[in-house]
Image 1 (cartoon, rainbow, N blue to C red):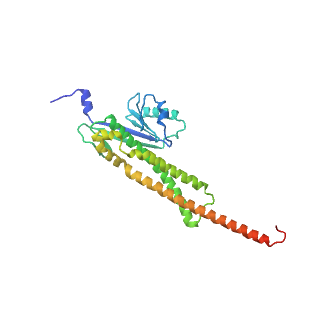
Image 2: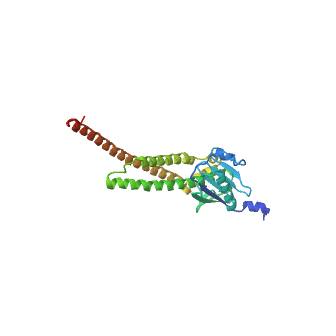
Image 3: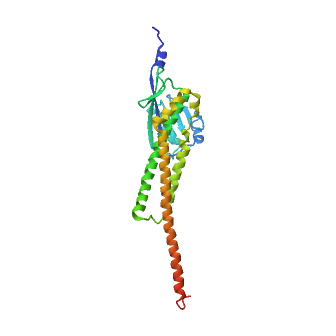
Length: 273
């Protein structure tokens, strides 16, 4: 019977790895943070570095950080380090998400009961999984914003339907439309990263399971639903704004007519001019 050294047996034994994502309200500038993390490797997508206690940290420009096999105490230290680097960050984090990966040399790459199973975790595979978890956390944040906007828009439309009119001031509408457009633009700019990462092209295994990862997090459908909801919010707000403008135009025309009538009346009054 063949025997293996202890370290070899440990390497062959199934292991579970954890990915923990934290999402912030604000976006992050990788260029600015690079000075705070001199040990990090910076790419167009992320900052990546190892902690002193082991594990890796990924920081993404769309306001998310992912911790791979980082203990909770070390994770808290790194989050505090990020908070000190960016004191303006909204605290605590708005979204936290966890995902597990099990490595088993004898297993085929697949997603089993919410856990990704791989024969091994290469640096490229870690990068792809971390990005997917980060996208899911960012998506949930934008979904919450969209739900709040949708509820507020629904109240405005209900008022229009019930009263046949809207509020006099259009300034709040302008601000709300600007927020909706800004959120939609952020979603489009952030989630274009749904395009296949470069690492997936270089690894046939991660390429095969990449679609399953997206399906596990339901990223494609959530993205389409979110984009559709933001578009419907924008269209509904533009309709409400057009109604408000029409109302003000009618009032303006009425005021002009009244001024003309008043001027005509004055012309018949002796000594009025």
